[in-house]
Length: 219
Image 1 (cartoon, rainbow, N blue to C red):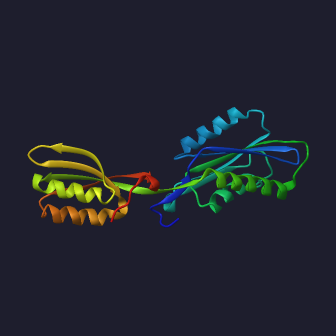
Image 2 (cartoon, rainbow, N blue to C red; image 1 turned 90 degrees about the horizontal axis):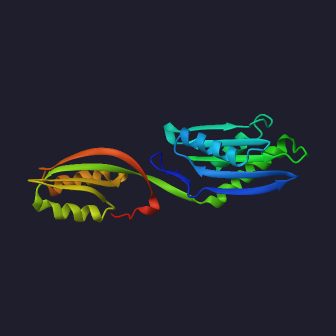
Image 3 (cartoon, helix red, strand yellow; image 1 turned 180 degrees about the horizontal axis):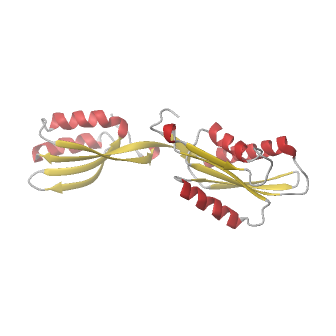
């Protein structure tokens, strides 16, 4: 990951199946944004494969100082299923993702090393197929006390720098809310101050996350 202010996650919900020495493995991946979503995805997967011998899983959420991860072997030998799945997630450098692998025991034991290899390899293959997307932070800016004579140039500058207008209120002065890639925060403050000649007010709003492919970069 380039910085803790951006991260990669998966593009699609996906599922693959493999048979290894008569055991059937069904691996499912989904983007999850919090622990509630991970619990729901696990519950849904168990519902879809209720008679599986094991439902082993791992997830990784957040990034940087806010990263958390958990896993479960669900009855397989300790550290033979959940950790290899998590290792695959870490290897592919994705977060906000959960993988659940349902295994139907086929009567032949794979051994601990065989299980580790099976769970890790199927998780890696799954992550290769789901695709990745880079998420970047957008900052909301709230602008007010804007003279009408400055509005056109402000809107033009925002458009050329990937600004997305959320709301405009027209009164004696103009109020404006806009989303902008967070790394342009300094440019935004400087541009607004220069164009309004210091007469406008600018306030920082909330952070939102967006697929970088959905943003047209400028400047």
